[in-house]
Image (cartoon, rainbow, N blue to C red; front, top):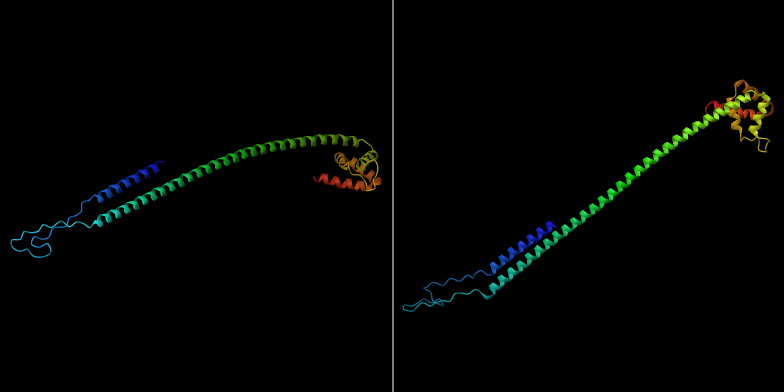
Length: 237
């Protein structure tokens, strides 16, 4: 706004200067043509003795000379005024363009600031979610360890009970656990074979060998499968 006021003041000063110059130019006095020599006649004839000299009227400027000069000056004045107006318009356009660019930059800065705030909020939410997931994972691992410990304690107690049984009785129970109460057309059922393997794993080695020996005579395929799974458990698979 200050720049616009300065431009308007400068243009007004220029117009005032041009007007003063034009006024001085238009009101200047017209030069008078010098009178001819006193010894010359009106029509170029020499004066004779006793003849009074003729008074010559001053030569006036042609009537069109002042009008032409005045017209020339007015045209120049109009041209200068037009140029000043064009410059003012150019400066106004540039000023408007600068203001629009400034507004655009302000809007872009506001949008960028909002995006940064959104990203910061998302980062905070992600950090909170990651912390929550980590906490839940730790709780699940802790619960899993507790379950495994409880299961190990139960299986150890069950295996101790099987150790006290006769090998034939323990073999029959584990066989029923592994293949179910009856055979199916597709072969032995293996729904609970993992439980049988776990019990065998926690039994004493001597009792385990006797139970598997009894099982070989009745269910050789099941005995082979149990031995294979016991090997995988011992290897940590």
